[in-house]
Amino acid sequence: MNRSRGATVASGAPASRALDASTVYGLDIETDTTVDGLDPRVAHVVAVALAGPTSTQVFTASDLTGEARLLARLDAAITRLAPGVLVTWNGAAFDLPFLADRARHHNVTLSLDLHLDLGLPSRSDPLAGHEGAYRACWGAHRHLDVYRVYRADVGARLGLPCGLKAMARLVGCTPIEVDRSRVHELTDAERDAYVASDAELTRLLCLRRWPAIGRAVDPRPASMPAHPPGAQRPSA
Image (cartoon, rainbow, N blue to C red):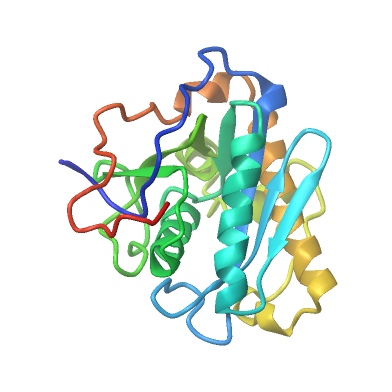
């Protein structure tokens, strides 16, 4: 049983049929850890990184007003990218629904479509206020949760928990590591470097298995309603 949920929005142009590694974009978020940073009902997004083939953009917010601007700027940046695949690490269950909830809180329009898929397995409780994980697309971009691919094969064979840092070390990378419950204690520069590193590592781990990993890209949910029942319609 599939149901749509989240902050929805304008429909984007169809994604390219041919998946191209040059249009793979890593996305990662950090949230306010002065409160429960895992709960979008109380925590705001403090940083988002968007990693492309040549550069990484970091969007930041120090307060709720800044968060609304961050979300609008992020959506504009994603919309400007050549159509491709947005890749996340556990974004199906965390990053994307978190961003959708925060956008709805501010009545900010995103080009993000979420489609609840109760068939997606999970080893932890769903994000607060949600029932499970999502298939997604963001405007012209399809979505791939790289974490789920690694968990299904590498994690299962080697008995690893498949955290992003563990997988990065496994392939010889040196990730930036911090206490994720104390992100608020980082300097702005440290936080920005941390979120950028995670987005870049997610993209790298995806590309290490390209193009075969492309089979796991979320299909575009053509039947998804533009504005699901119960969701507040964002303002134009």
